[in-house]
Image 1 (cartoon, one colour):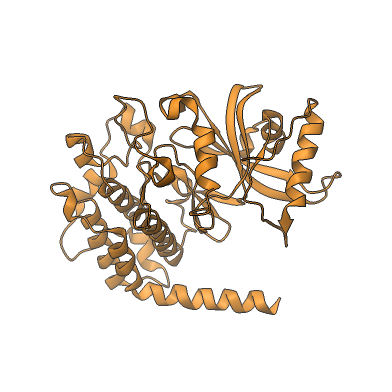
Image 2 (image 1 turned 60 degrees about the horizontal axis):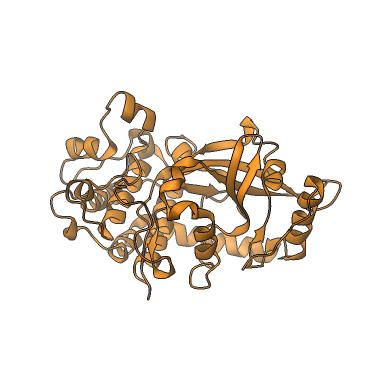
Length: 357
């Protein structure tokens, strides 16, 4: 079910969409769990015609942009949003019905409350814009950047990296181990956005299966996880299980502590080593793979660094995938870090500050 906006004139469509968002928000938060059906005119308006300066990056199946939503006719009050559009690579999924499937997933009461899943405001299917045919969605998300873009940055602190690792692990635990388990199968730092508080938010669900999504959603013969995050065991055996998500999570964790991301164009053009290949060669027992610059961070802890490295290497275990940890075990390990206490103290401080405002 979706709220329909069907007026023909582009400006009317855009304004009606903005009015509907304002109508359903409380305390500056979008409250409705019924996404608003919109047109490509809305997506163009939010992104200023997909302006280059609003472009954040590529996802596995499309592009992500920053957007501005006007909350009053004058444009004096705005709301930052994220706009994702799909490209023709997505045709291998759901017979091209990927928009409808994402709306079904993100609107479902079993999952739509989770803080690390994108909150859907609106969607456009079978639209058309200056760039050609377009399917897209609008998220209630003020983006800092994608994790892919942010991973190697010097202003991404040690404790923020641990926070991202823990929160994303808790999301995967939620998806894997609920009453109706899901498998993402498309974990990639480019598919994870960071909000302004460095909370990770998953924004790509193109290969997600399980729960209300059912089984395999991609075309027969399609055999690919996200480039740079492919489970080597899956690629060699064709066996698709939860442990492939654990492998990809291990690479996310390695990227966070080593400040490394695989530049996808280099992997294809120059056949560079992938992150897991680098880690297999560089790893030594009881040592860490943490980037040297992070060891100078005020919250850095050597014991945590070794524990995180050991955990990541267990996640990307190649020879026997069944020996990889579950995401519950990963979360438990992360909560045993010294950094977890710092995160708890920071959360209590932030809560006190909000209450005093």
